[in-house]
Length: 630
Image (cartoon, rainbow, N blue to C red; front, side, top):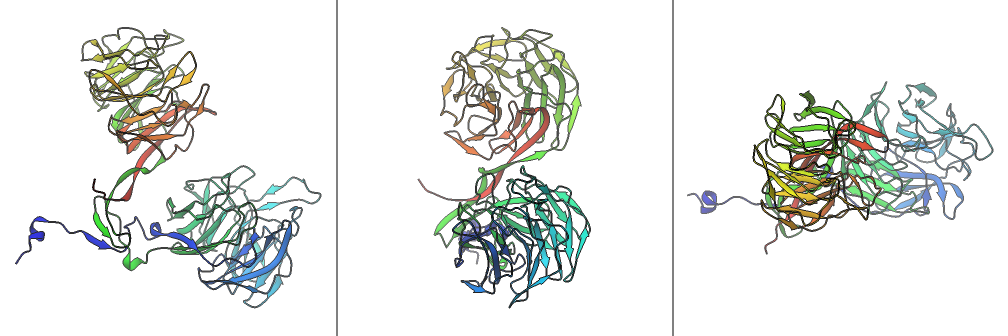
């Protein structure tokens, strides 16, 4: 006989831990046994495990104390083992707990001249073996005592201190007896993250002396540039078995970092942070079971942290919309999209660099960017994959308003700054039918820097702007003429708009005098404007997507005048603003469009280096939220 719950109900699973995107995403760091001697920039058994690793040499407290001491970890505690023959720090290393190699390094605190001496550990003692061909320190390393690689690093041609350094691109391979030069990396660097084996490894980030953001994958014969990590840093720890499976953690970036990221052969994913913010640390193990130890937090550290994931047999994959009961935390949970867990990712660049262009579209796979400066009349559409140039507007303008839900077939482009060939405040209005632009009824007065909202070429809203003084006027377009709507509460220009004619947002902007970039936010209901909670930072010339109940605000100029190119992104949930993931680069005037507060496109614009046509897409993350009853 069928049970009532099988007919009318649904099953809620009981799980011991939260669901996750992958096994590695379940990982967390916990304290392990401390080293007996705190050390900074030591060597390690990179190919060791969480329960079988060694740490050797380094710079100990009090500074300066270069040591040759070594310790071994058994999964619970560290114990002393035979010291190296030569005290050194900033050395390179590879191998296991019982078979490791310590390479080069510096024998004094001034890092004057790296040694080329190499010592090999057999589980009992250290023995000097063939020296490295090129003197260097702070190089990457991975592999075993019979098949290892030393990558990049920094060389000094001699004494005294202050002699210019050379950042290395050369790579040397160790076969257990001798060193052989092999293929150079593409970008010379030192202090990079490194993990893998001699036929399948990866390096990421580093410095030359500025930060290097790119990553390179090694297949045993050549290096290939792959996706950059989410956060650029150097001098961190790493663990991993190949060029498709690895972790990087800690480092400088430019302050001490606790961030952890995993590499799956294609992309980097941010995971739970270390408990400590630490640089110059070491790591060993795998993506599911790793160890982080030693380093500096301002002075040499003895801390050890263990990375543990949910075992694969009990792992449950995250599933959007799933409701389950977590028996460990005694809570019902639901899996949902969340802007707080979202991030920006680079997408295909547009064709023509410009600033203060107008963006329209309510989907990240169907948008349009119109005109802009310097005197651009180009129009480009976005289909989710690529940009296509379509018919140009009749009058080149920037800082104009626009309206469209479906830019492939219908859009409106109104007002703007047409200098130098036209007026500072234009009243021109152009309608798009999917193939051509036609001039239609002008705005009641010339405007630039105004907000624009609406769904088509027959339904649009213009509000605020400069005439050239700041105005709070609102005008509604019905397909043939403009009529006055309710005035904004705060007159301003270079504000950002999004929404429809009956549900629009007016965000940020600029007032003068005094010269102030605003945090004001207002909502329009079709007849009047209501003040909302202020944004966290002032934004002018910013990008936006969404509506009055869920929106994103990103980039622009701020928070004071003259302001810098902003990366800040803020999420509106209908009640308050929350800062979420930043744009990857500051943008003074992004053209924004998209579906909601959980998806958006930021495209074109300008920054300290000038105009650009690059674009980024924001996608919300998927996370587990506790169900609460109020």
